[in-house]
Length: 516
Image 1: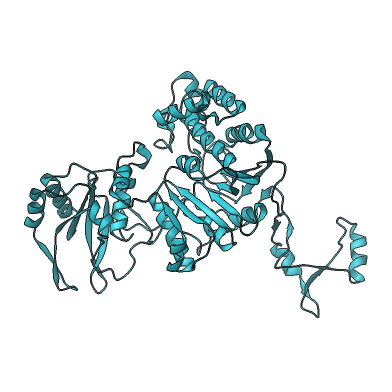
Image 2 (image 1 turned 120 degrees about the horizontal axis):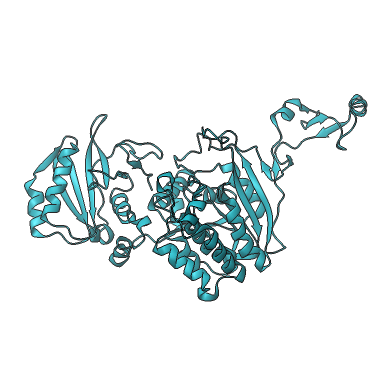
């Protein structure tokens, strides 16, 4: 396509990317929709003070938000002002929150957010804007963080936007069902890009409209605001018309957004659990940026922000720590604009050589311990494989590939990934897993070169005669990471249809991932 606009996806930790890849004063608008930490027991803050947090009531994000070494490092970094990054207000706030909350999961979440919001403020241009999507569970704490970062440096709090999407889930005995989320809106300075948003006209108004002889829509009534009924009736009788621009007009938008539903429409849905509607991102991007501006989403998920930015003629940067999200975004953009679109996207962080593959495999952060396996499975299978997220007796299986074996028939290949330590016993165990799962084939992707014993063990299992291809395949195959990276080795089994459809599940608790 040769379009000079910036289109960049970063696969990795957004803090590292923000600090090392994005320069000062470069971003016009940043929107983030991070994990909310919302299903935690709200009263854990009191339990933390007593030192007796009830882990049994900590229902969600237990693996994501815990007070661990990373949280301790972040806390120390802020409170000792490493790199001179933090304002006095930020430092004192985090110290104060530690006294109130204790070093528990909620403080770990706030430390995580403080580190990143600090960098987001730095990368915004002086007239830039920031929208943080959250929910009422932690929004009051997050507003303190944003006040400390933005307002202490000349920025300003603009709005607490209430996205009222209607009746939500929840049937809790002593509370009301959830029906809204919060978007905190800040500007970096007193000057900002602003295109006041309009709500579309209501269906009730549209039904009242009439067309004049030139085809323009109008309704009868007063243009002067509230009037007595008698006055309005007099004006109607003399034919006062109020013209309505259906394409570009609307009613004034307040900080209560109750006209955008909570779930993406059927044609928008990517099957992503926290996906937001396109209309929500359209309103934000149109309000706080202009065509050609650079938009950042540091938790880009399934890519709604970058997809809307692309359609609205903006440049964009997306960051996500999961390969699932990066592949889903590429799939989404290719579907919308064609495969040629991918050549205009710079993707950073995906292993390109053995050193970067080993770095991915050896990440210390437990939150990404599966990323190497996901990358290997999806890259080898051209994103046709199904990732196994189960943690049970079949934990040796990292993915499953469905391949065509006849008209309307498929068989399976189970896939295991080893970043080191593979041996002859690994092949024997994988074949046992294959038999247990009643799969025709098994594949080992290994970082190390296979030993002679591994090859011998694999060959001893025999071959599978493919009824369509008229050839035999080793029932247990071995592919190295080096072959995937340097030789471009990919799956050669016939696939007559796409087995990956976002949001569907076809193998126990395994999650299907999208095609690139």
